[in-house]
Image (cartoon, rainbow, N blue to C red; front, side, top):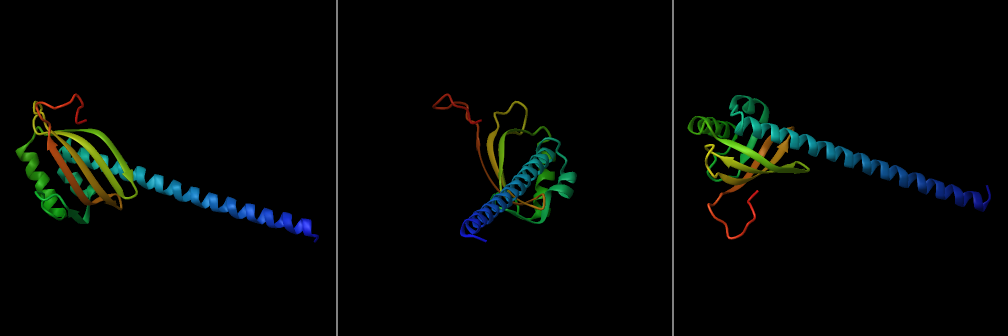
Length: 159
C-alpha cells in the first residue's frame, strides 16, 4: 500500500467513525424525545383524570408511583395521602375544573400551566405544576398558584 492509499484509508476510517458517532447521538436524541413526549402525554392524561373527569379511582391505579413525594406544603405526602386528598376534594368541589394553557417536558420533568376553578363562575387561580415522572407515573410534585385578581396593573392576562 502506498502513502496516498494509507492517507485515504485513514480519512475513510475517520469519516466512518464520525458518521457512527452522529448516528448514535441522533438515536439518543430520538429516545429522549420519545420519553419526553410519552411523559407529557401521560401527565396531561392524569391531570385530566384528577381535575376534569374527577376520576380519582383510575388516577390512583394509573398515575401515582408507589414512592410518590409531595412538595406542596398543604397537600399530604405519599401516594395514599394524595389520593385521599383528591377524593375529598371531589366531594367538596364537585364543579371544579381546569383548563390546560400550556405544558412541556424536559427529560423526566413535566410542567403544566393551568387555569383552575372551583366553581364555573369563579375567577379561579393560575397554577403551575411540575412533576417528575417515573415509569409513566407521577413520582414527585412541586406546585405554585395564585388567585386571578379582579384587576391588574397591566393588560396582560395570567394565561
